[in-house]
Image (cartoon, rainbow, N blue to C red; front, side):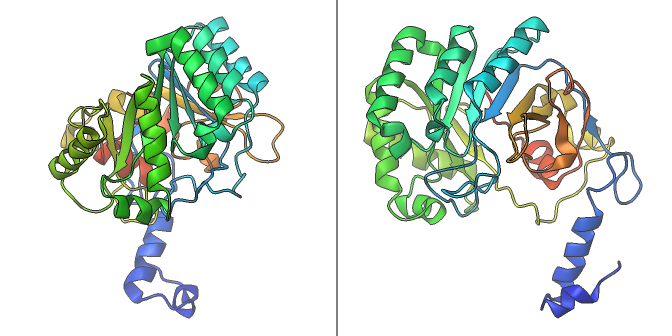
Amino acid sequence: MQKTTAHFEAGMSLDAAAQDVELRDKFVNPLTTLDGQPRASVALGQLKTLWFNTGTLCNIACSNCYIESTPTNDRLSYLTLDEVTSYLDEIQTQEFATEEIGLTGGEPFMNPDIVPIMQACLSRGFRLLVLTNAMRPMMRPRIQGALLDLHKRYRAQLSLRVSVDHFDPKLHEQERGTNTWEPMLKGLKWLALNGLNIDVAGRTRWGEDEAKLRSGFAALFLRLGIVVDAYDEKQLMLFPEMDASAEVPEITTACWDILGAKPDDMMCASARMVVKHKGEAAPSVMACTLLAYDERFILGTTLADAETSVPLNHPHCAKFCVLGGGACSA
């Protein structure tokens, strides 16, 4: 394996330099893996879920945020109501089989148009899932009032997924920063008290087995009086860590049978995400919610453009989806 002097001048060890070169050589060719085998790809079956990244600005800066959201990262601009509406219109005019709209960020409740965006999605009959940290942006009186109103009118159509990285406050704050646990609990309990549909997203970064994690979350929910079934994989979704520098295998066409996995079960077989890159005049449609910055996964500006197969040409494709079994929607 070729090694460059730049690695060693930067103080990297031989092993680290070798791994870095290998990672840069892997996940390059969209058609073949590093050793020449045919790379697996996933065809879009039906567009069941359309995600909108409402902007990468967030009220906190998590240590391992897959999209690097912070109070200053605006690499993905706020989507406007008109931009979202244009894609909702395309779903209807092109007769896509879309059932669910997902709103993610950043923190979606920081987007100035978030309430009318939610209203536009719900009024057209879509199920709506909003990902949130349930902290100060969501707890502003204007947002609280809007959530109560939307819940009253749309009931089961609207769900919120709250990020609770761990049932241990110390580990949660290790990821999200000091003084993030209590504000999150306040928001989570407010949602539960007012009867909104909630589920929870946790992390597996501390190496605990799933049974222990679910048991710990179950005890937390019981103590808080929150009706979330920690043993239901939808109500408590546990996500693997997203480390693009980690050593993971490339996925070949032979891997489907070897792993007992199916292309149709991958997230990109049924979902796309709309983002607006800073400085661009119009939004783009991305293959995956995890790859918002990688230009190789920009599929076009319309949903029709995005009706194409996606080569599994990124470490996240392997670790999160194929090997980790992860998915952002239900």
